[in-house]
Structures are given as structure tokens and as C-alpha cells.
Length: 265
Image (tube, rainbow, N blue to C red):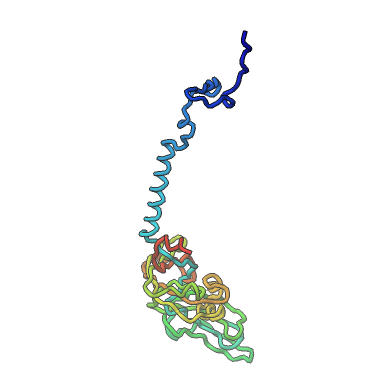
């Protein structure tokens, strides 16, 4: 009886012509999924999301290239007469007497508004150099006044109202006359106008206060260290109850540009 031949696997079997190697069966735990299903990573919803993203990016780029946006400068402005307040000043120190005028009263050219008795006993009349309306009264009744003290501020009759602001020189460099501007003050409708004047020479804080005549207003509308004055004339019919010295927001449009310009380095 012949001896049984030893069992060998396919790797040790000789390459005999005509011999077919046996392939082991697929284990049951391997499942029935196809190989191409296993490597498929792009689903239809991913393709749709990619398409939407591309369209969105292209739309944003087109908008940024062709759309226009306004550039502007915003500051605090104050209501003043276009030619400025007319101050009535006590030249010499002394005692003010007989001053009864208050804000809103009218004065005539040459009208006496009070007297100052100097320290050496001289009596000097205070008179108005213009016809107009009292915008601010800093003294009332009998009071001691220093030299060069402003007693009243008068708005000359017929003077136009203006909104004034002061900007740092670098902020005012792009401003020109006729640029659109909007002034918004409490309890008044917004006023749309245009820049009427740009004072190119910067003023110090002291010069601004002297020119305005209202130190408190200068502190509000001028940047630290002073700045360049900008004016916008306002119609007399607009918010007539708004008092001189009132403040609000002044927005001046300086130009237009495309959004993509701000994305460039």
C-alpha cells in the first residue's frame, strides 16, 4: 500500500503546466460590499455644496469689483454764525453795572448794554457795534469783570447759520468744497447740505476758542492740539429753535470706492 503524500500549500507547489491553483473562499465576515463602493468618497451632496461655494465666491468677487461704497469722515459739529460771533468786551477791569440783556434779546448799532466802573473810578460804556441778537450773555446784574472779559456774544442780523467742526490735518486733507455732508442734532431732522469752506491753515486750541468765542464749544468740536476748520452752511428755515452752540454729528462724504480696493495689500 503506497504511503500518503505530504500536503502542501499553493506556495510550495511546483509550477506544473496545466495545474490550477485553488483560491481560498472569502470569509463570511468580509461582507458583500464591492471594492469600488468602499473607495467612493465624493457623494452627490458634496458636489452640490462645492458648486454653491464656487458660485458664492464668484458672486462676492464680482460685487467687490463693481459695487461702489462711500467713504466719509465723521466728527462733532457745532451751530455758529457763518461770520462768527461779535463779542462785546470789557477793555479794562472793573465793576459791570446796568447789564440786563439775556440770550435772545435784540440789540441795535451803538446801543448801550451796560457800564464798567474801572478801579480808578472811570465809567466806560459798553455798546454794541452791530445790529443783531444776543447769542450768549456771560454776566448779569452787577459783577466784577477782568480785563478783556467777553460780556456778550452777538449774532449780526442777516448772518447765515453754519455748522463748524475741526479735524486733524490728516483727516481734512481729502476734503473740498461742495462735498456732501449731513448734520444730525437732537430733536431736529437731519440736515443734508455740502461743505461750504475748508480752512487749510490749522489752528491751535487757543485760537479755536478765541475764534468761536465759546470755550466750551471748542473743547467739544476740536481735536486735542487743534485742527483744520470745516464749515457747512445751514438754511434759516431748518430747525429754527436750535440754539447757537448746540452740537451734533457731522458726516462728510469724501468719495467712493470699490470694496475690492480694501482687500488689496
